[in-house]
Length: 325
Image (cartoon, rainbow, N blue to C red):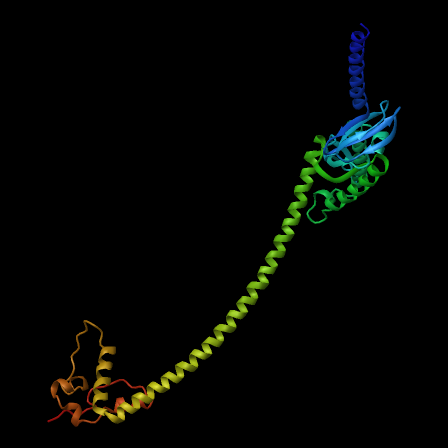
């Protein structure tokens, strides 16, 4: 009977031991996932920070608080600010952040909601300060635009404050919206349109002035090129006419009868138009060939043709050649 009663007792003790081991394991071990940060606290005081994934060990009475270590983007609501010239504007930005120091983050903001609340305050203060010391043209003018440089300054200041006070790493700050309050939009837009009109008129006048300079220079170059081309053309034309006169003179010396015939035919073609009826005497130079086929073989070239080759201009008259008997 003693042996039979000891077996259930051993089973109970074994089960209790297993249960105790499971409970102890549950209370003393914890898992940290990829991209998580864990803070182990003892009665609310941080005693251990785990930033690598895997199993962690703690005392049974200690607690574990886990945080998401990934990137977050927070967009605060639209706020109203005043520029350097006291112009009311509305602006909204966005902050990209993540937990850099889990212990300080746990001690100061505790969770994501608290972190975004602090980041909204920091961004509002720094963005308002940047807008307040800058003119409106720094955000809306194409000539004096400095919004990117101002945002870089805002991001640097937010990064320093967030990391120092809350253990938050600010990676970037962007300006999502920049506008005017509804009550001021019509007046501001009208002023902007007038400024843009003045700028466009200035650009247009400068363009027209530059265009006149270019056209004037091009016209002068064109005149110079045409003058040079005319000079070259005249030189070549004179050389051609001299060569033509030389060829005519050589032809006259080599075949005066044929030359006289050709010049007579050319003269008749020039002063007698198509469809013209003329009455000439039988002894005319134009009828010489029709009257006698050997007319130009026995006769000398007309004196008028010889004068033409020498540069004299006369009207051809009949009777210059003596008709054959």
